[in-house]
Amino acid sequence: MVQKLVLKNEVVKVKGRVKVITIKKEDFDKFLKLRKLRILDKEYYALMPPLDSLQKNTIDTNGLSVLIQQFMSLILFQANGQSQPPSAQMTLTTSNGIVTFSYTNNIGVNSQGVTVYMQLFEESGNYAFQYYYIGFDTSNDSYTTSQLELYVSASVYGTSPSNNTVPATYYTSLVRIAYTNTSFSKTSDSYLFIVWLIEFQNIPPYGLLFVPVLQNNESISMLTFYTTDFANYPSFNVYFNNGNCTFSCGGNCPSAGLGGFIVFPQNNSVILEFPLMNQLGVGISNLEILICSKTVYGTSLYNTFPISGSTSTTVSPPVSGATVYIALLTLSITYQTS
Image 1 (cartoon, one colour):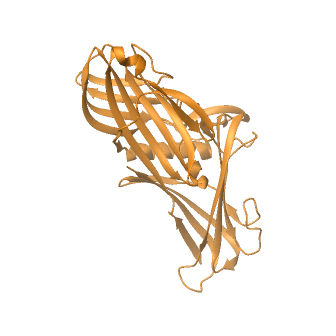
Image 2 (cartoon, helix red, strand yellow):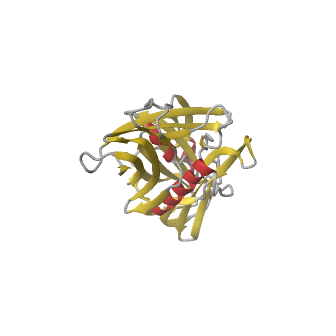
Image 3 (tube, one colour):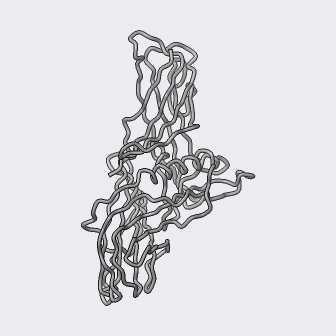
């Protein structure tokens, strides 16, 4: 018989929070404070506005779905890459029309823009990404705003289509990931700051591969499956124990890798599914399954750091006493927004 397993016990939480601050121009010098951030065990500092009292926004599940679909296509196949977009944008619907803050590396005077600071850390055995988008308007412009929108993009480090030893960077489209209705006014004698926090939480180590890395000031991206000619490269394997093999990561049990997938929004979530199938060679009444992954990040193909993870489960046939000869696995990741 064919055994189908749907793995849905891991839910990645996607959250967004936002805060609008206006200050007098003369207060600017003492407004921004150094904040310590970290990428795993490495720390760095960034000048940021106060981060307290952030308010809930709406995550755009359609935009998130497009982002995940394009990101996974790049990681697995280096397919459907886009021309390099801005790393981020904020769009304000104002009394003067649409005002757009485009990406810049830092906060400047007499200018408009948005910069982004990233954190990656482990908590209770799982991982979390935080992206602090800091929008600012330090110009003399004045307007009243009714809506804010946040647009983001992701990038990956891969190789040239014609030569797997030549580095190349690929990008997703710029997509709307969050928005909020709000009302505030900026005057000519004030500065405006918008703090927008986007978080990916509750990520098990083996599931890091499925979480897009958004473009950030630290230039950290994920490596694609086409980087096997370099020292560190990612992998993902699902092993099936047929009782006649070494059942371990890197063992000789029947295995399957990642191929085609589907992505779709559903209510307040986005679902990512991978169908996997493998012949076991013998009949099994209780099938053990082991998922092993290595996700590789870096600031280039030459400066990388891997994170490995695994998880296992045992599947019994839906009919008592039945025997499994072909394993059909649907690996499902749910991105739950709030």
